[in-house]
Image (cartoon, rainbow, N blue to C red; front, top):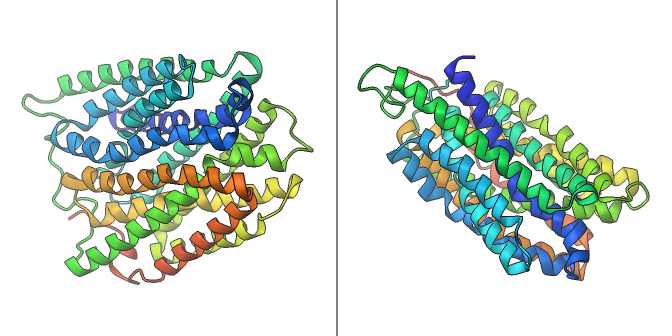
Length: 404
């Protein structure tokens, strides 16, 4: 396996673990701690808020450090730090203690998106498919969180769902550090991973200032809305299926299995969207995805049973399908030397919004149930559709980036 392919493998596994760690608590809270700690679901989920705040706020310094020091070195810190934090979270006995553990997980999880994605697109002419493949691994991490946690709840206890992935992540971090060190040693004297020359403007189309401001503003707006929708679906889905699939799912393992099924099927959407982004206008692809989101959320309002499961698969297909679009746009309009910081800014906004969404989910569920949550997300998706129509029809939105 070539060094580039091996590096891409670790980046993909890192994305898988990043989302897995961030969503273990979602299933633990929904299916175990409500009974074990005698708290309602609405009372428990705000304790995940500090972790998601850190997930957002720490993305910018992580991107800055990666650009200034070493992207590979920061990724080693990611693997080891998030693994150790997960193991520490398993020791929690109170809501405050678990909130502190989740805070540490979120701080290290923040590293992945600005750093990992910058590494994925580095030096590539076509970025849609690589980002989509990487995104599939992230989505499988979302799916596996519910499946693995549900299994451990029924067999060995929820704490094991934090411990085993933590051990695996630390082991991967040690292996990645060894590979990075060996790769640097093989390079010619004086060359390092940070100083290998890349052609000027690699991966970025020429964009004038006014168009850049317009594009970046729309990217940020749709990032905010997308963060709300992503959090409202991925974090709450185990509880949604627990309520809507009463007749066909009677255990934590079953709920975890159905959640995994929804996420795993939906994950393939990124591959198709990535392919479309390399062939067609991002404006057209984005509008199609956002429009379908609004339709499926509206249909889901009061569905139960098998119909709810099928529509859940449908709306997760387009929720996951949106993920690579903004990342591709950022890659097209930014230069490599400051791309990690721009990704950092985007993910600060994205994950800060996601963190603030948790109390909203809790409040809506406590007062109106999940039906009203789907109404709110349908309106949000319609707003994304309207914003996308303001994207320019030419330039970086339509053309492929070129390497001079």
